[in-house]
Length: 279
Image (cartoon, rainbow, N blue to C red; front, side, top):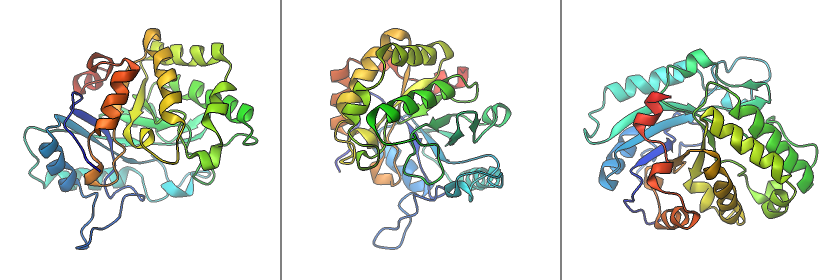
């Protein structure tokens, strides 16, 4: 996949091999998501900052924690930080350390506000339906999925411990069904209210490069464009993340850059490292 340096020189959603889903090896047996390979690629692309946001819950031993997260926890982040301290990162690339945590149910997420304040960025997904044991709608009927997506979004944007919603409304359409039908089943006033609340609370919506270019989400670019056009006038900010699980996926493709331009978003609409530090 061809990558390009773009007008958004930040990538705030990057997985290292500390995420269980980012442990593939190249033909020489070297890990594709090694932190030093991400940092070297960021420098090649001219990025000014990247954020390592590995999958994380604060207490993986708690009853009800999704199995996928059982190998995470504070020790994992400590190991990542220790490894980073031994590297010689490119001086032109600012490195942030955060996490992508999980919504176990509407009243329970994988991190508390005190721990969140020790991180540079916290992303929270609401639609990891492909993972066993995450909250799901009562059926995959479009109306049920629509209501569940809005329930989850409303719950997480009220939190004081997150910076952004990871890949909003995105999961494979072979699981959730036709996203266009789901979107059309969402009550417009309720969607606006949820997005307005995100704007009021200062919770950003992610523009996720992987979701926008996934063959599993054929309707997502058009649907999410509509969501962003509603959200922007309501004061919602955005953040860009490639969701890279491989250093070759880092940064932004020309396709995503064009999508951002067509939606009417500008660089001023996106969070910067300075914005994250101020939150």
